[in-house]
Amino acid sequence: MGRGRVELKRIENKINRQVTFSKRRNGLLKKAYELSVLCDAEVALIIFSSRGKLYEFGSASMTKTLERYQRCCFNPQDNSAERETQSWYQEVSKLKAKYESLQRTQRHLLGEDLGPLSVKELQNLEKQLEGALAQARQRKTQILMEQMEELRRKERELGDMNKQLKIKVSLEMSSLETEGEGLRAIPCPWNPGSSSGTNSFPVHVQPSNPMEIEPEPVLQIGYHHYNLGEGTSSVPRRMAVESNIFQGWTL
Image 1 (tube, rainbow, N blue to C red):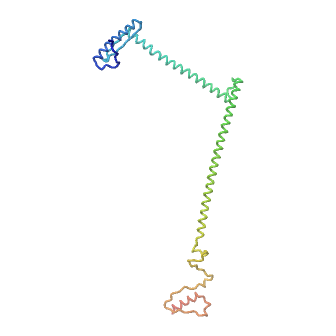
Image 2 (image 1 turned 90 degrees about the horizontal axis):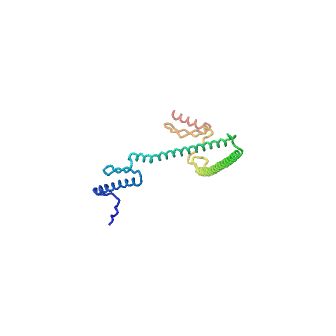
């Protein structure tokens, strides 16, 4: 019977793992030797065990083989860096040339350095300027139309606000007039000319002659009241009252 296929995984048994390492290491070293002899190849083999022990094989000197390996591995990296630097230099050169071309075109559009240009180039420049001028005018017209539309919109808004304010003021004025009419309709008791014709407050009319004021009642103590005769009707009443008071006290 043939040997079965071994599953590739770590051998858990320590003794079996060590035995397998020794067998396969010797087989690998043998294969490397056979490859170097049969094919005339430069072979270098380095093996470290799990304990850190070194096993190596070199068909030639191990040092020379490692130096050759380093030259083959690191030189392409240097070459790639050099190629990248060269590509960046070329890119910078292209960008610089493009920048100079744009500056030259700008000077031509400004009317500078036109001497070296040919007739065809001048015609192309003229077409470019005409196209740019037409676009600038179109853009200016568009901006002006937008500004006019904005001003019209603001005018409509202000007109609406003005109408609303007028309506509000008219309503307030009508309410004030209604309140004023209500106040005028209320009778005032202190107004002699009121339409009701009644007055709760007595109105004293000042006579034209101050001597015609009737005397107020006087408290008389200790004297008799004397009536004036008809013959003394010409004397003012106030003087009669004063003389009556004086005669009463003298008596």
